[in-house]
Image (cartoon, rainbow, N blue to C red; front, side):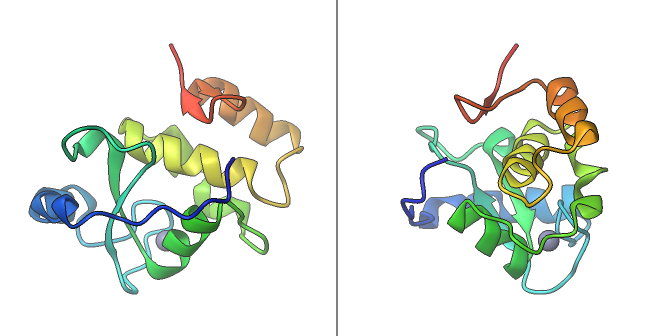
Length: 125
Ligand SMILES: [Zn+2]
């Protein structure tokens, strides 16, 4: 994944209420309540979409922004990577690939099951 930093856009704020409801006010990756905010996954669609946006805590947003998740406890993402919501599944898959555990067999399995294409950095199929 590219390490280029992409600024979040203000327009994503329109999803804030719906996201908070979907996420019950918690980070949709690790369930933390610390500094949760909407996070839009790159590349952005024309209009902010619930399928490309998740509510994420300060720590998870930092990992997503850096495209690197060193020191992450991979277990926190075991539930997220199975989510029905594509945005949550995609964010979890991107973090697992960027983690210290990316070669672990269970992570490979989870990524396959999530339909994540590592070369594209996207869900496929
Ligand atoms: Zn989090």
